[in-house]
Image 1 (spheres, one colour):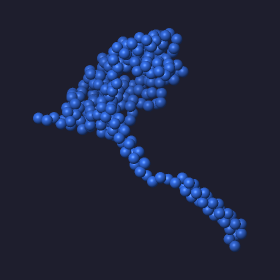
Image 2 (cartoon, one colour):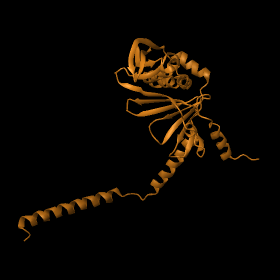
Image 3 (cartoon, one colour):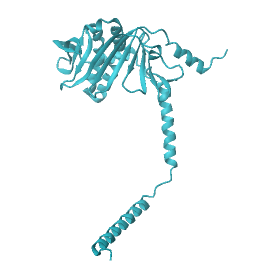
Image 4 (cartoon, one colour):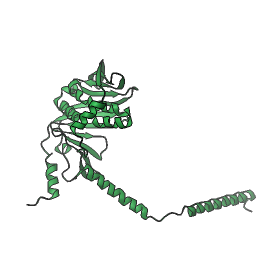
Amino acid sequence: MKVSTSMLMAVTLLALIAPVNAGVVIESVNKHQQHSKVSIEETRARIDSGSGDDYLLMDLASGKTYTVNHLEGVVIDLESAVVTSEHITNAVKDRMMPKVELVKQGDGPIVNGYATVHYRVMINGSIHCSDEYLSPKAIENETVKRFVAAMAKGSDGADNIIMASLFGDAQMCEAAADIIDDEYALRGLPMRSVDPQGMVTHEITAITAPVAFAVETMTLPAGYELLSRAQMRERLKERAKALQQQIDALPEIDMEQVMKQQREMQQRMKESAKDLKQELKTGFE
Protein backbone atom coordinates (compact mmCIF):
# COMPACT_ATOMS: atom_id res chain seq x y z
CA MET A 1 0.00 0.00 0.00
CA LYS A 2 1.32 3.43 -0.94
CA VAL A 3 1.71 5.73 2.08
CA SER A 4 0.79 9.34 1.36
CA THR A 5 2.55 12.39 2.78
CA SER A 6 -0.60 13.33 4.69
CA MET A 7 -0.72 9.86 6.27
CA LEU A 8 2.92 10.12 7.34
CA MET A 9 2.29 13.53 8.88
CA ALA A 10 -0.74 12.18 10.71
CA VAL A 11 1.36 9.33 12.14
CA THR A 12 4.04 11.81 13.22
CA LEU A 13 1.52 14.02 14.96
CA LEU A 14 -0.32 11.14 16.61
CA ALA A 15 2.95 9.78 17.96
CA LEU A 16 2.95 12.61 20.48
CA ILE A 17 -0.59 11.89 21.63
CA ALA A 18 -0.64 9.84 24.83
CA PRO A 19 -2.42 9.94 28.18
CA VAL A 20 -1.41 13.14 29.97
CA ASN A 21 -0.51 12.97 33.65
CA ALA A 22 -0.91 15.69 36.21
CA GLY A 23 1.97 18.13 36.15
CA VAL A 24 3.23 21.60 37.06
CA VAL A 25 2.55 25.09 35.73
CA ILE A 26 5.27 27.75 36.10
CA GLU A 27 4.35 31.37 35.34
CA SER A 28 6.90 34.14 34.85
CA VAL A 29 7.43 37.68 33.63
CA ASN A 30 10.41 39.30 31.87
CA LYS A 31 11.85 42.82 31.95
CA HIS A 32 9.39 43.94 29.26
CA GLN A 33 6.47 42.82 31.46
CA GLN A 34 5.68 40.03 29.02
CA HIS A 35 4.14 37.02 30.75
CA SER A 36 4.75 33.40 29.88
CA LYS A 37 3.52 30.05 31.15
CA VAL A 38 5.31 26.70 31.12
CA SER A 39 3.13 23.60 31.51
CA ILE A 40 5.14 20.46 32.36
CA GLU A 41 4.16 16.82 32.71
CA GLU A 42 6.09 13.57 32.67
CA THR A 43 6.99 13.36 28.99
CA ARG A 44 6.48 16.82 27.53
CA ALA A 45 6.28 20.53 28.18
CA ARG A 46 4.39 23.40 26.60
CA ILE A 47 5.55 27.03 26.59
CA ASP A 48 3.00 29.78 26.02
CA SER A 49 4.56 33.23 25.58
CA GLY A 50 1.38 35.22 26.12
CA SER A 51 0.25 35.29 22.50
CA GLY A 52 -2.67 33.09 21.57
CA ASP A 53 -1.24 32.73 18.06
CA ASP A 54 1.38 30.08 18.83
CA TYR A 55 3.08 27.93 21.45
CA LEU A 56 6.07 25.59 21.81
CA LEU A 57 5.72 21.89 22.56
CA MET A 58 8.72 19.85 23.74
CA ASP A 59 9.20 16.10 23.89
CA LEU A 60 11.39 15.89 27.01
CA ALA A 61 12.72 12.41 26.23
CA SER A 62 13.92 13.10 22.68
CA GLY A 63 14.52 16.82 23.04
CA LYS A 64 12.48 17.55 19.92
CA THR A 65 10.67 20.89 19.94
CA TYR A 66 7.80 22.10 17.78
CA THR A 67 6.17 25.47 17.24
CA VAL A 68 2.42 25.36 16.77
CA ASN A 69 1.36 28.34 14.65
CA HIS A 70 -2.39 28.89 14.70
CA LEU A 71 -2.30 31.79 12.22
CA GLU A 72 -0.67 29.61 9.56
CA GLY A 73 -2.27 26.35 10.64
CA VAL A 74 1.12 24.61 10.73
CA VAL A 75 3.47 22.79 13.08
CA ILE A 76 7.15 23.69 12.63
CA ASP A 77 9.84 21.19 13.60
CA LEU A 78 12.54 23.28 15.28
CA GLU A 79 15.33 20.78 14.77
CA SER A 80 18.42 22.84 13.96
CA ALA A 81 19.15 23.18 10.25
CA VAL A 82 22.87 23.60 10.99
CA VAL A 83 24.67 20.72 12.70
CA THR A 84 27.97 21.59 14.36
CA SER A 85 30.24 18.63 15.01
CA GLU A 86 31.12 17.84 18.61
CA HIS A 87 34.81 18.15 17.73
CA ILE A 88 34.34 21.71 16.42
CA THR A 89 32.12 22.68 19.34
CA ASN A 90 34.63 21.45 21.92
CA ALA A 91 37.53 23.08 20.08
CA VAL A 92 35.71 26.42 20.09
CA LYS A 93 34.95 26.13 23.79
CA ASP A 94 38.50 25.13 24.74
CA ARG A 95 40.05 27.97 22.77
CA MET A 96 37.58 30.81 23.35
CA MET A 97 35.40 30.22 26.39
CA PRO A 98 36.67 31.78 29.60
CA LYS A 99 35.94 30.35 33.03
CA VAL A 100 32.26 30.69 33.97
CA GLU A 101 31.23 30.37 37.61
CA LEU A 102 28.17 30.59 39.82
CA VAL A 103 29.63 32.31 42.87
CA LYS A 104 27.51 31.90 46.00
CA GLN A 105 26.72 35.20 47.73
CA GLY A 106 24.58 33.93 50.60
CA ASP A 107 20.88 33.67 51.29
CA GLY A 108 18.59 35.50 48.90
CA PRO A 109 15.09 36.93 49.44
CA ILE A 110 11.82 35.05 49.50
CA VAL A 111 10.58 35.18 45.89
CA ASN A 112 6.87 34.48 45.51
CA GLY A 113 6.83 32.06 48.43
CA TYR A 114 10.18 30.33 47.79
CA ALA A 115 13.37 30.83 49.79
CA THR A 116 16.33 31.46 47.50
CA VAL A 117 20.12 31.34 47.47
CA HIS A 118 21.89 34.26 45.81
CA TYR A 119 24.50 33.40 43.18
CA ARG A 120 26.51 35.73 40.95
CA VAL A 121 27.37 34.65 37.40
CA MET A 122 31.00 35.60 36.80
CA ILE A 123 33.42 35.22 33.88
CA ASN A 124 37.10 34.84 34.78
CA GLY A 125 36.27 36.13 38.25
CA SER A 126 36.01 39.72 36.97
CA ILE A 127 33.07 40.10 34.56
CA HIS A 128 29.74 40.27 36.37
CA CYS A 129 27.01 38.94 34.05
CA SER A 130 23.99 38.62 36.33
CA ASP A 131 22.67 37.71 39.76
CA GLU A 132 20.57 34.56 40.04
CA TYR A 133 18.28 33.72 42.94
CA LEU A 134 17.85 29.95 42.98
CA SER A 135 15.27 27.91 44.89
CA PRO A 136 16.49 24.45 46.00
CA LYS A 137 12.96 23.65 47.20
CA ALA A 138 11.39 24.22 43.76
CA ILE A 139 13.80 21.83 42.09
CA GLU A 140 12.83 19.01 44.49
CA ASN A 141 9.80 18.49 42.27
CA GLU A 142 10.94 15.73 39.90
CA THR A 143 8.80 17.05 37.05
CA VAL A 144 10.42 20.47 37.30
CA LYS A 145 13.92 18.97 37.61
CA ARG A 146 13.38 16.83 34.50
CA PHE A 147 12.26 19.89 32.52
CA VAL A 148 15.22 22.01 33.68
CA ALA A 149 17.65 19.22 32.76
CA ALA A 150 16.05 18.85 29.31
CA MET A 151 16.32 22.59 28.68
CA ALA A 152 20.00 22.56 29.66
CA LYS A 153 20.76 19.89 27.06
CA GLY A 154 19.79 22.27 24.28
CA SER A 155 21.97 25.20 25.40
CA ASP A 156 25.72 24.67 25.47
CA GLY A 157 26.68 28.23 24.57
CA ALA A 158 28.66 27.26 21.46
CA ASP A 159 26.69 29.52 19.11
CA ASN A 160 27.20 32.55 21.34
CA ILE A 161 30.88 31.76 21.76
CA ILE A 162 31.28 31.76 17.98
CA MET A 163 29.34 35.03 17.72
CA ALA A 164 31.52 36.57 20.42
CA SER A 165 34.65 35.57 18.49
CA LEU A 166 33.30 37.40 15.44
CA PHE A 167 31.69 40.46 16.98
CA GLY A 168 33.36 40.94 20.36
CA ASP A 169 32.46 40.14 23.97
CA ALA A 170 28.86 41.38 23.95
CA GLN A 171 27.61 37.81 23.58
CA MET A 172 29.94 36.24 26.12
CA CYS A 173 27.47 36.65 28.99
CA GLU A 174 24.77 35.02 26.87
CA ALA A 175 27.10 32.08 26.34
CA ALA A 176 27.76 32.00 30.09
CA ALA A 177 24.00 31.91 30.75
CA ASP A 178 23.67 28.88 28.48
CA ILE A 179 26.58 27.07 30.11
CA ILE A 180 25.39 27.51 33.71
CA ASP A 181 21.99 26.04 32.80
CA ASP A 182 23.53 22.68 33.74
CA GLU A 183 23.82 23.87 37.34
CA TYR A 184 20.14 24.60 37.91
CA ALA A 185 19.01 20.97 38.21
CA LEU A 186 21.55 20.63 41.04
CA ARG A 187 21.37 23.99 42.82
CA GLY A 188 17.85 25.27 42.31
CA LEU A 189 15.27 26.78 40.01
CA PRO A 190 16.08 30.39 38.98
CA MET A 191 13.27 32.34 40.64
CA ARG A 192 14.69 35.76 39.78
CA SER A 193 17.43 37.06 37.46
CA VAL A 194 18.91 40.54 37.85
CA ASP A 195 21.32 42.29 35.47
CA PRO A 196 24.45 44.16 36.69
CA GLN A 197 22.48 47.43 36.64
CA GLY A 198 19.95 46.02 39.12
CA MET A 199 17.08 45.46 36.66
CA VAL A 200 15.01 42.32 37.14
CA THR A 201 15.15 40.56 33.76
CA HIS A 202 13.13 37.48 34.68
CA GLU A 203 11.04 36.37 37.64
CA ILE A 204 8.89 33.34 38.36
CA THR A 205 5.59 34.65 39.69
CA ALA A 206 3.82 31.38 40.49
CA ILE A 207 4.36 27.61 40.62
CA THR A 208 1.20 25.52 40.69
CA ALA A 209 1.11 21.75 41.30
CA PRO A 210 -0.45 19.33 40.77
CA VAL A 211 -2.28 20.42 37.61
CA ALA A 212 -4.30 18.05 35.43
CA PHE A 213 -3.89 18.91 31.74
CA ALA A 214 -6.41 18.17 29.03
CA VAL A 215 -4.95 15.89 26.35
CA GLU A 216 -5.29 18.57 23.64
CA THR A 217 -3.31 21.02 25.77
CA MET A 218 -0.15 18.91 25.58
CA THR A 219 -0.40 17.48 22.06
CA LEU A 220 0.02 18.76 18.54
CA PRO A 221 -3.11 19.62 16.52
CA ALA A 222 -3.67 16.61 14.25
CA GLY A 223 -5.01 18.70 11.37
CA TYR A 224 -1.99 20.99 11.05
CA GLU A 225 0.64 20.59 8.33
CA LEU A 226 4.10 19.57 9.57
CA LEU A 227 6.95 21.69 8.18
CA SER A 228 10.66 22.01 8.77
CA ARG A 229 12.23 25.40 9.48
CA ALA A 230 13.58 25.50 5.94
CA GLN A 231 10.15 24.77 4.46
CA MET A 232 8.55 27.52 6.57
CA ARG A 233 11.23 30.01 5.51
CA GLU A 234 10.68 29.08 1.86
CA ARG A 235 6.92 29.55 2.25
CA LEU A 236 7.37 33.01 3.75
CA LYS A 237 9.94 33.85 1.08
CA GLU A 238 7.50 32.91 -1.71
CA ARG A 239 4.76 34.94 -0.04
CA ALA A 240 7.04 37.99 0.15
CA LYS A 241 8.00 37.50 -3.50
CA ALA A 242 4.33 37.43 -4.56
CA LEU A 243 3.65 40.59 -2.56
CA GLN A 244 6.62 42.34 -4.18
CA GLN A 245 5.32 41.36 -7.62
CA GLN A 246 1.96 42.95 -6.78
CA ILE A 247 3.72 46.12 -5.68
CA ASP A 248 5.84 46.16 -8.85
CA ALA A 249 2.69 45.79 -10.96
CA LEU A 250 1.18 48.99 -9.57
CA PRO A 251 1.28 51.95 -12.00
CA GLU A 252 4.31 54.15 -11.57
CA ILE A 253 3.61 57.35 -9.69
CA ASP A 254 4.65 60.58 -11.40
CA MET A 255 6.01 62.47 -8.41
CA GLU A 256 6.48 65.66 -10.40
CA GLN A 257 2.77 65.62 -11.34
CA VAL A 258 1.81 64.90 -7.72
CA MET A 259 3.87 67.86 -6.50
CA LYS A 260 2.33 70.09 -9.18
CA GLN A 261 -1.18 69.10 -8.07
CA GLN A 262 -0.28 69.78 -4.44
CA ARG A 263 1.04 73.26 -5.33
CA GLU A 264 -2.11 74.05 -7.35
CA MET A 265 -4.30 72.88 -4.45
CA GLN A 266 -2.36 75.04 -2.00
CA GLN A 267 -2.73 78.04 -4.31
CA ARG A 268 -6.51 77.51 -4.60
CA MET A 269 -6.77 77.28 -0.81
CA LYS A 270 -4.84 80.55 -0.41
CA GLU A 271 -7.07 82.29 -2.93
CA SER A 272 -10.23 80.95 -1.25
CA ALA A 273 -8.98 82.15 2.13
CA LYS A 274 -8.20 85.57 0.64
CA ASP A 275 -11.68 85.83 -0.87
CA LEU A 276 -13.28 84.81 2.43
CA LYS A 277 -11.33 87.44 4.36
CA GLN A 278 -12.39 90.09 1.83
CA GLU A 279 -16.05 89.09 2.11
CA LEU A 280 -15.90 89.24 5.89
CA LYS A 281 -14.21 92.61 5.72
CA THR A 282 -16.83 94.12 3.37
CA GLY A 283 -19.78 92.56 5.13
CA PHE A 284 -20.70 90.52 2.07
CA GLU A 285 -21.41 93.66 0.02
